[in-house]
Length: 625
Image 1 (cartoon, rainbow, N blue to C red):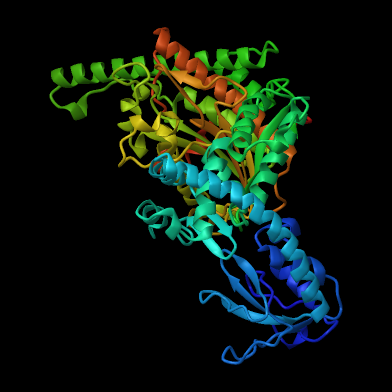
Image 2: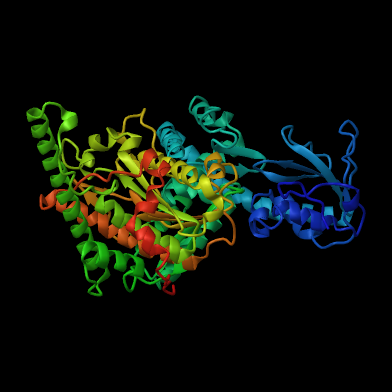
């Protein structure tokens, strides 16, 4: 058995030394973080030489692990590969004679047969020859930008795109290009991109030249989220071309189209073609989604066989029961029409409650004027509306249904409290959005009716912390669908998420996730990319509402639960579209969504939700994908 640290990382020691003692098993465990990332992904973050070495030595019995690294002052043995470990890069392997990076923790070495090192060197030269040819094209693109006077503008745009994504952690050889709160920030805080703008291309490192061109092509192929597909991985000229060709082939297959001559296209044209096909794929029978590994920050796009319209075939039972019992809406079988009817009924209830509250306030004031003291006035308090209102309670029913259907520990949906706050001084202008504060957003974060019982008194803090983070994220995403020129430089924002994702090990490198025990997650954003944007007051939005689900322990979520979250997000989508249409047409008095604030969570407001009582008694039904 390989010794392990408390966090699951393997340890060095005498028990793991010597030939035939499991040296390569130790290497495999270190690379994959004891199975938490795949070997394919682990090798993708290694340099060409490292990756080839791993492929050659795994399973061999003549590779010896040296638990004690030789004295660094002494020349390394010609057959010894030094092993180091760092929090973000993981395990690194250094060729004999290659000095390890100063920031890495030395964990030992591997004594590798000389014939293996020879074979690895030979194969590395083959890969490097191909890479040199592909780098020539990238360098030509860069020189053309410089010659045409376009380089500074493109660098400025690249720097801005980097700021619009949460984490960038790209490796080119041993060089790190990063922008992350969880680790290094070479691109912005340490000024790498600013420095490049101030120096001629001839003074740049080869890796700098490559990064600028390849990162630009990645954005062209699908906005800055494409950067995240190489987080914690090696980015090379050959690797990017193969990535784009793979993505092009997948898209063509999804659309039942021939691939044509994509392999011979210039790099930028290939990137543009992939971007153009992406929008057609979003209306195909396959759904784009992303798989996220929190250990490496990598977010890989995948395609799921999930035919349109991706709405629930029938209304989820919990939502249907809430509609019948609490909103007086009998189902007709048309899911979106029924949800629309429920939304209108909830708006009417909120309007009636608001009118009753206004009348009560006026009556109380009149009574107080005629009584000797306000304290002696006797009034009928009338009906007390729920803190979150009927619209908020309907949203809670959808969220609870998604939680029960996916067996999540808790889940949430967030958006703007008052839709009228999105109104600008002219249709489509961003000034309404830019005036919003974090408190102008809300998050309906609810626990599973039974799964969080063991958490006890920590339930309310966990939910409130999650809600606060989502309110901040929603504020951060709000301007992301406006043209860059319309947003002040000082207003930081991220591009909002557009496609669903499913994540594992989300607690790593993220303090908020640790505090809220977030390990496995699903996110289904709306407005969904296979539908038109959510349009209100002349502007279309993506990623402005969602369904998010969390498991604090295993097993991880599967694509079956991802599809269920997407179906429930369709209900959230219909709710907000109904409200927006009525507000813009002047046919609805749409109230702000109240509640879901600190006092609501601290008083365990979810227990007063009528759907919460129904949830424990409603059987879950999950449609097949």
